[in-house]
Amino acid sequence: MALLDALGDDGTLVVPTHSGNNSDPASWGNRPVPESWWADIRAAMPPFDARTTPTVGVGIIPETVRTWPGALRSCHPQTSFAAVGPRAAKIVEGHALDCRLGERSPLARLEDSEARVLLLGADFASCTAFHLAEYRVPAPQVDNSFAVMTAQGRRWITVRDTAISDDRFDELGAAFERGGPLTRGRVGGAKALLFGLADAVSYAETWLAEHRPHTATV
Image 1: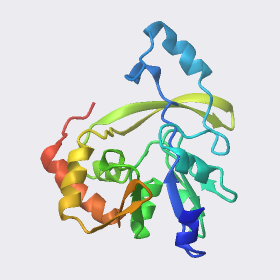
Image 2: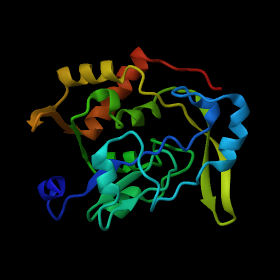
Image 3: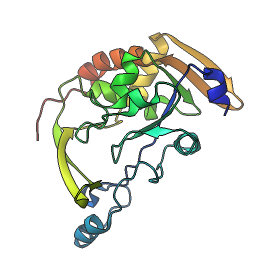
């Protein structure tokens, strides 16, 4: 894979391998289902398996990395990350079930590792790094439900977590791109942007607090 070649033996490649379909049908807005189906869907939802659960809605590159020889994957049933390289285990371990994209997720460890983000054929509206900033500004707490495998077998569980949303991430990204330290280029026909994850998160913290304030807890 060209990305691994570019990183070399000392580099670690990390991608979002999200599977957001493992969620409460009561919250489904894109293809909502009748309330009479909810209980059956919750009972039948396959539990997350870091080895086999496919990615959903994040493209072919994350799915390729997830299945790459030696890849490791974090264990959040909705917002997992996969990594290949010498720092993979440190980055993906300990992903808390009640912390999709916050301080106890791979995003925070990537920030500590001075990671850089490559948006390849994607725009800021889907920039996962911005979600870390949502955990650092006032935000609602919400119930989040999914199917997991435990020592006692499959379970449907509900946890409390910070509400996350990509609402206005396109505006946030445009502002960051105008003034942020980043490198622009093209890979084939795709626009590419390369920037420091910590820079993006720091900028997002200030921008979100001003432009998308939240104060309520529900």
